Image (cartoon, rainbow over all chains, first blue to last red; front, side):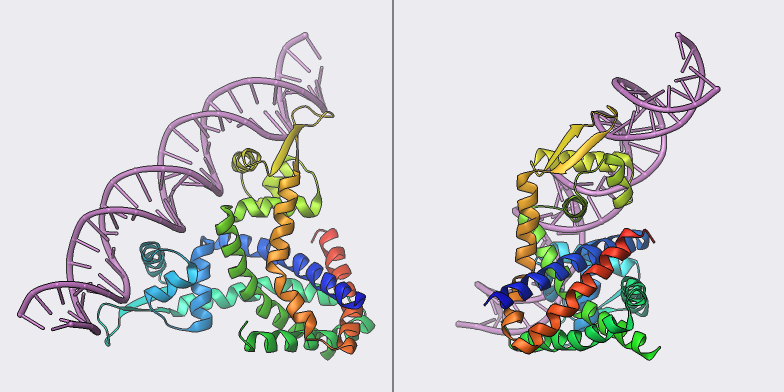
Length: 150
Length: 150
DNA sequence: TAATATAGTTCAGCCCGCTTAACTAAAAAG
DNA sequence: CTTTTTAGTTAAGCGGGCTGAACTATATTA
C-alpha cells in the first residue's frame, strides 16, 4: 500500500511544519505577555473544560498538587483566574477563568492564527479549491478519531 | 472574496484542533525527556535550518546573547549540539545538531505524529488522493512564506 | 598600527517551576 | 466520636532561564 505510506509521510511533514511554527508563535506571544508555558497550559485547559478543581489541574499538568497550587496562586494574583471554595466540599476549590483570563486566551488564538491569512493570500484560486476539498475530510477524520476514545 | 474567507476559516479550525493536541503532547514529551521548551526550540531551529551561529540563535529565540550562550552550553553538555569555531571568523561559532540531537527531534516528531497513522487508516482511497494533492500545495506555500521574511 | 566594532563567554542576581515534607482543614469510614 | 482519607497550602531547596555588566578574543576601520 504505497499510497498509504505516502500520505502518512505527507501528514507528518505538515504536522511538523505546522508544529514548529506554532511552537515559535506561542513562545513569542507568551514572552511578551509575561506568562510561562505551564501557566498558559492551565488557562487553555480551563478555556476548553470550564471550571475545575485543583486536582484536575495537577492531573492534567502531570505535576504535584503543591506545584499546581503555586501555579494557580500566581495566576490568581495576575487576575487571570478565580479560585473559590466549593460549597459542596469545603476542602476543594473551584478554579475558573476570569474575564481577563478568557480574553487572554482568545487573543492568543487570534494572534497565532494570523499567519493563516498570510498563507491564504499566497494561494491561487485553483489551489484554494483543492484545499477546500481536502481539509474538511481531514477535519472530519480527526473528529471521528477523537470521538472513538483511543 | 468569499472563497478566501472560507479557506482561512478552514485553516483556523485545523489549527484549533491541532494546537490543543500538540501543546499538551509536547509538554509531556519534553518533560519525560528532561528538556525545556527553549532548549527544544533551539533543536527545532537547527533541525529546520541546519547549522548556524550564536547570533542566529539569540535572534531566533529573541533572547540576549548571554542567554543563548548558556542554553547552547547545556545542550552541548547533553551532547545534543556541537559547537565549533568558524574557520572564516574565529570569533564566531558554528552550532549544529549531533547525531543524538537529530535523533531526538526525529523521535519527538514520530511521537507526536503517531496518531497520523490512525488518521490515514480512516480515509478512503479517494480521500487520500485528494489530500495527496492538497497538502504539498500547503507545504510549499508555508515554506515560501517563511523564506520571504515578513 | 591604533581605535573601534563584533561574536561570544562568564558571573551575579532575580524569578519561576518543581519536588518533598510538614501542615491545616474538612469529609468519609469505622 | 475517633480514625483515616482526601484536598489543598506552605516552606525549603534545587536547578533552569533570563538580564545586565564586565570581559576575552578576533575582525574591521581609519
